Length: 249
Image 1 (cartoon, rainbow, N blue to C red):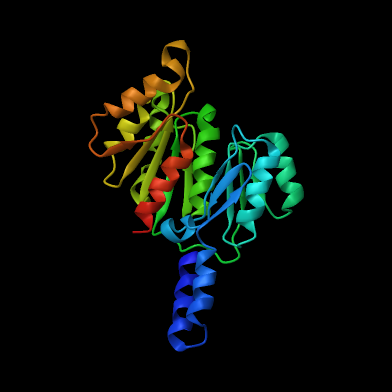
Image 2: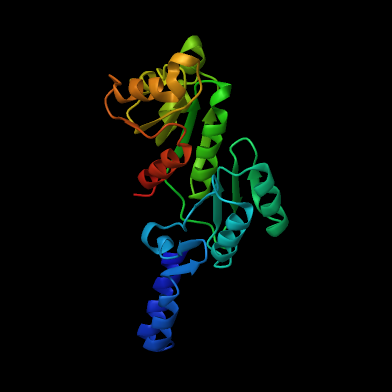
């Protein structure tokens, strides 16, 4: 990954195999790159350990491909979220080895070298099948960042015995991401059962009074279980990134 490459470059300078001017020229290419429609933050891989992720919603297919080309050519990996079917097809044509998750609306191109592995398992717990698109976005993101991912699907509070029957999975996880719509109660239940970090993701799933996920968001923010952290509505990506920072500490 980028950090390892920079470290190797600095060692080459120290050993006299690379000149200071040559090293400076190489490092200057890590900054940013201006396109007519975007400014790509190439330095992010060095700062945060993973390249800039492309949020495809609102972008044209041509814009996504243009940004993707510039990121992918560095070999650090490529992750695109909220991908439409049209853009996913274009990414497949451009990058034959890219992995498209239609349910999670993601596209992932593995890096030349695998990222550093996170410690333990990121467990993604889904209240209902309707929450799976957000859960899969979280799963793909967590895996792209070097984590082992496990899933518990459709174990919401309407049938709490389904969750309690898998208490072993809860106890073995390093971080748990809880994805739930409706009233969002599952995050509090899980938060009250485990001692590891719990990241709650409210989804926009629910009937009218759920207000597009606001009801679940407020319920999770007001959780009586200590230590539950909440991200934005439908933000599986953000939850996975936070979980990965925990597993890589």
